[in-house]
Image 1: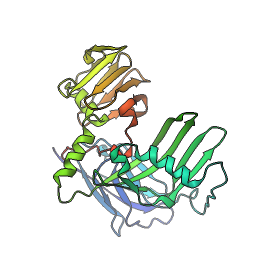
Image 2: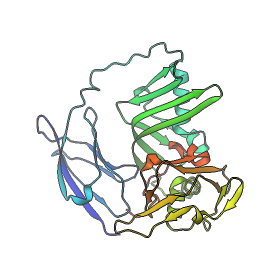
Image 3: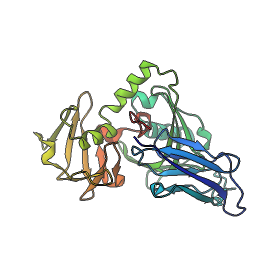
Length: 314
């Protein structure tokens, strides 16, 4: 794959002085860098990278760049995040102890799988938690990226949380919604085979694996089975795929909600709140918020997640 380079300079918007050690990364990948003492950075990417470029620095507003392919170099002016500076959050008596709130947050944020249970948050003190007794919702936020060490998959994930809200019902958690940007640091420097096997197990049957299989029309070859109202169906009678366009995308139309079965996992569900969505061969899909997964795929959390460049050349 042909590599392209995107470079730029990051400056303070008021003083126009260079900012050193600013994090520059492609969202949800292992591809990242930092600025030098002159505020300069240079980062390579290939066609496999479709993620938004994230510019993040503590105390400043985050900048997201989606159209970096049309630019060779750019000057980025970061504005001080005055809303976050000097604010002290005191945990009020909201009917739930911080210990219990943190336990519930970690269970739903990291996941209940073996991979999720192997994760450890390195900076729990930075996470703010609030429970709304009337709405029965638990919210979480942090002014610093949440650092997660995944022991099973050997990644250190820096997750810059945008929002997190879980709703509690009489019988447990009824919904979990969260979003943010993430950068993966590969800790498997010695290339241990056991870690590669763990990652392969997490990958097979994941949303990433499913979207790539759909793009290549290899759903059945990759052991996916589909059902509607208790009957097994041909997926390509429900997924209508267009031909590849000039930008490397295929457009998908989903006829109706489908049950997805993958070996060794509980059933998953896919449905959409839009008429069409786009996919590419690397496993990207958009708009993300309009493609809804339930069941096993819907329950996959940070602990089971892999970077979008997994098994792809940079």
